[in-house]
Length: 333
Image 1: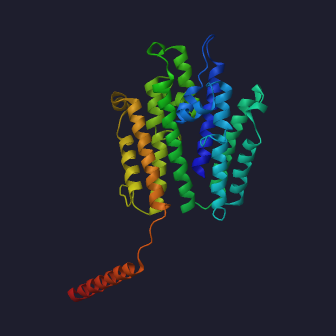
Image 2: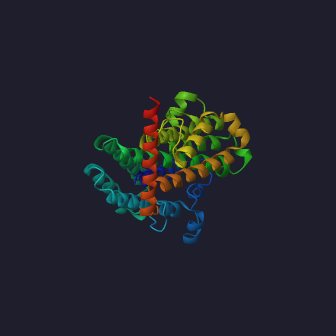
Image 3: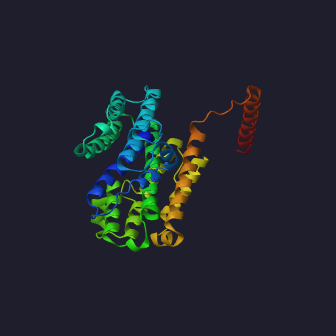
């Protein structure tokens, strides 16, 4: 549920930031909408349904297209179905907020939006997501279910920050000639605004440079949308769920997440750039997919029921060994 809502919010962020970027383009510059589709790895599906990556087509595809599993409408629909499935575990306020967010988008249409209302529409989607997060924190017990929500949201957020940075650094810039140009600076500014990190970045680093932006969005431990912060928070929730100590692991999910967190904690940005930022981010995305699958396999996937006789034999052996050890311990005293 939380992963779908976070994904919907991030898609709204991508579109809204690109709309703002078009306002700052130099005369004669071409709007770029195809990178938004590339960010979500949905280009083949888009090309099969639309003739060109125009503003209207991309916004329709990423917002209202029910055939696109990563559209805002599809994500909120799935979040609503997940909320319905765990209705007894969440508060009434959470259920109402998920419904409110879904119905708001379901009642809209890109064709009905006026040019001046587009920014307001996507800003409201972000606000609805923030409201759900606040309602969840204030009305749900911070137990296992709450930590699963935190775990899902932080993994999804790390993935989207990773994809956003990867697209800008590797795909969006047309040529090396434009590196350092006013257009390049506008794109890095739009990138930070997509992650709501423009003000926090300027406060910490001042002037915008590509390496500093990459360092901020990957390695910063305080900014809530930085990859390192997201995964550290996810790791805390996972350890709380399992009860294992930090620095140890009891299942593959904890092992994979711990390895990735350690890599981020001890790798400087200079080493990342030397290795290749695209290659590094691509590897992180692969690791996040592996972590997500491991969490599903360990906590949610249906497992074959052990044969009852085998279970009884194992229990008998365990009890016999325990009794033997107890007698041995008593004899030694």
